[in-house]
Length: 274
Length: 274
Image 1 (cartoon, chains in turn cyan, brown):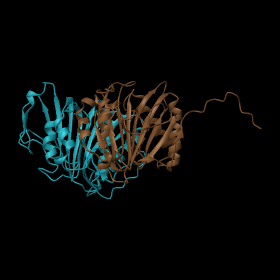
Image 2 (tube, chains in turn orange, purple):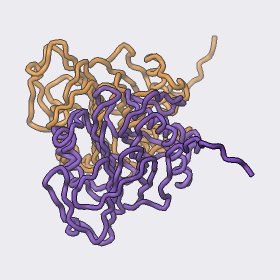
Image 3 (cartoon, chains in turn green, orange):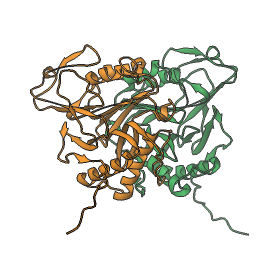
Image 4 (tube, chains in turn purple, blue):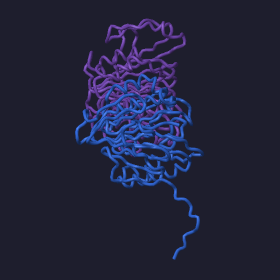
């Protein structure tokens, strides 16, 4: 499988600390050696770094770890291939443009017997179930809402509906962002931590590295970090319930709330109408 | 304005040597300080490095200069802004997906009074004439050929027609690739050099750096390098005629030939029909 890392903030923030621990899982402290990638939104633009090799050995990952790119929304991924060869075109995150915005998507899980009918507007370049799911999501958004984005609640509800449908095919944890919000879907495993004043010292779980956030932040800063497995061992991580979609904005879960994405189980006894 | 650099090869080749000279023009030997970018096709995948600062000062450019990414098709750009602020989303090259392939585009020039009617399928994220032209081109390709790519000659002819139409609005030198071919359009300035056996020593025009290609190639290697201004001072560069579209494949101009993209001037005297 794979692991996901996301960050959503209210002021542009670098992800060097979290990425240091996350990167170690790509071949050093864990076995996700089949490629890695990270996408940074900067304004409406995106920088996407991809490498189809282990992040622990990657010169590009070393640059990302050292080079403080400040961003409001970041999505990163380390890969343990399930479907699709180890090639650049199968390396997450994936990027497309819809409604004059870039969209970034990364997936942890495995979808079986999943072959959605796509219109052709968004077509996978590689051979992963993940990129197909991303194209499916964007295809549906374009089909339902036309050439302009809908209000945020409608977008959120549509994503929850799509996550429910696609999630019937298997494990479907994902992070998705249009640069404004970061959507996190937990089908089996995803957790988040909220960092805000009073900031404290955080210590990585994967390396003996700590940072005192009170020294590098202002009192109004807010940062949400989302990961498959908590990255620090001395902070309060919230485990997302299975079958939920959350939306983060300005460094906190936003007003859109948490939507269920579990298909209602068939009733054991039919409900009688009165 | 800006400067373009492209490379098309028959075996995956790194661009470290050419990029060293090109990068120097982004703030050191020339004034193109408003951002830079480079895209490498690797198989069907793309690595796109963008930085909205001078390439001469960029840590990412330093990585690209040192890190030999081997590719069949590369497009790079250094920017001197004409339209659109100096921001990441206005930094070339631009990337989109069409027909399950990534397309990469970079432009040198300036288009005036240019506001094409776009269908909405491809929308610019930033505020440049260049990205709008790219969206316009892909929009027309999708409209004319549907959800599958046409045969190469039809694609080439369509691109020549679009280059002619868009070129009426101003200077429109561009490089475009779908990972298989590299299309080069010269409206005012573009040159190329073909490197093949017997390989010789090449010396950069912008730095005192030389490489003996006979030591790093095999006899079957073929590489075409395309640039706004020749990058070396001891090789034979071919200046492309204004108003022509070329297609490179496997390191040489391919069988599609050179198509004119100059609108036929109106006849001074009407031709009489017999």
